[in-house]
Length: 257
Image (cartoon, rainbow, N blue to C red; front, top):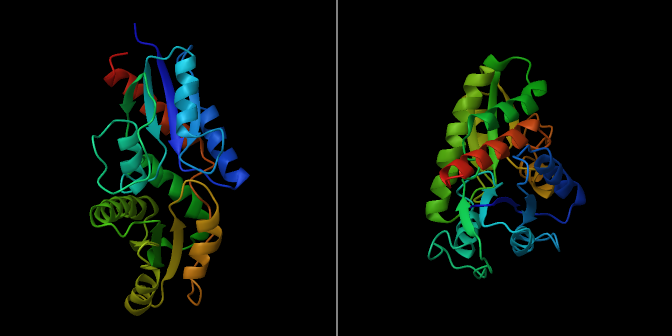
């Protein structure tokens, strides 16, 4: 008989508040009695890394692990290397320092957040206080991005789908996207200044939790331009916990639980 456990994986940070927000979101997830849930991190959180989570769950007698990658987009190169190290794919698309984990349990890998409609709802609620006349506003959705060809395309497609959802939700005149890697912010801001000089630009950061990128990098890239920004990331939001819960339920169903 299968005994399920859940391993939630996110990137990790040296910022204790960043980690706390993720831990709180995972702790709020409601699962079936007897199913242990472990919040693990790719790096930077010693004692809470992916192998620590696997070892912890297997020590509890788990035979099947539902893995929930708590990353914004499949375009993250980290999804590629984590999938390889977990044995989900035979080889990574990009060279990685990660080596296969020590695993006895069966792994059932779910998907990152991507353009799930719930994310558009979260982003909209975060930027809504910045808006006063959507018909004369442009939302610029800013994500981390990637310079790697295939991963870059996944980022762009995902961001554009999400931007379309935001435009519809808020009734904004325009919605656009920019990546930090490669740096597209300046080009996008110049373009909108030229095309619609009377419009306000609302900048929406697409990051899981507030930290270095939302507080330092984005404001630095926006320096010299007129824009509205509150730096609010996806967390905290109960909708993230709901998304994790649905991923777990789906994973258990697919795994035959």
